[in-house]
Length: 294
Image (tube, rainbow, N blue to C red; front, side, top):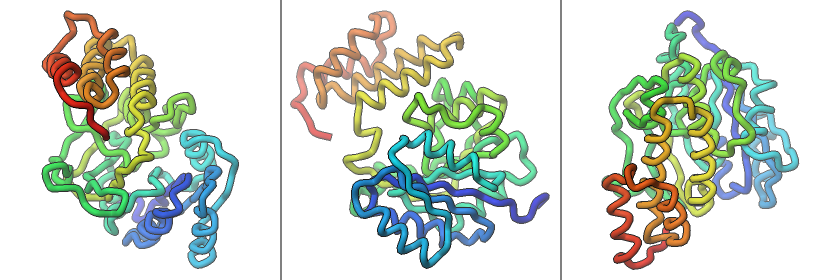
């Protein structure tokens, strides 16, 4: 390696994940890679997260700070400003890293300055840590190198947020995370690739991703609003309308038998000429399928 042990800064922004935070922190502390700076920030939790983190901090001596709620992107930017690492890993306070994850990514990014982000594969689990059925897993997505159009047009599988390792130089070049967009992963991936870097997604299982009732992606209105505003930042792209309507059709299908009021609002935004198979399937769900719960 050109720099045998670059500092990797892992940032965990904790918010009301007292049930999971210890397992998340310990998964970072148990990495086989040794040169890790761990920054944990509690962003105004009202549960017992702070007490649990304090107990771990007393044992392991990582940097822990408590603040009034500022939101995830502001919290990440604040931590990045004082980070020592040349590689930055934002990590969820309810997710779990596999032990070789950091070492694998550092080795891959060495000598590849064109790679702004390295990612891997995830195992999906529920709130109790039980793995999802095999049919719903994403453990074996093949290697892919993504540029901006691959990301914006969804030509290749998206790199999962719990596995992102971001080159500090790339983050600085694009101005860090945007506090106006609260779903931070898609936008930072688009910004970094738009700046000319690649994202390498490795066919390596790197993290266990917990899906539960408080995930941002469970809040359909919140997710749709943030993703549409993310896409709008790149409205000068010649296929912007195609991307927007494709996303609206996907969300129409997803919400058609879960939130019919929202589904009708989405359908009204899709011109008939932009309808696709998902739009038609959504119509079937909207009018002929029973209402389901997430």
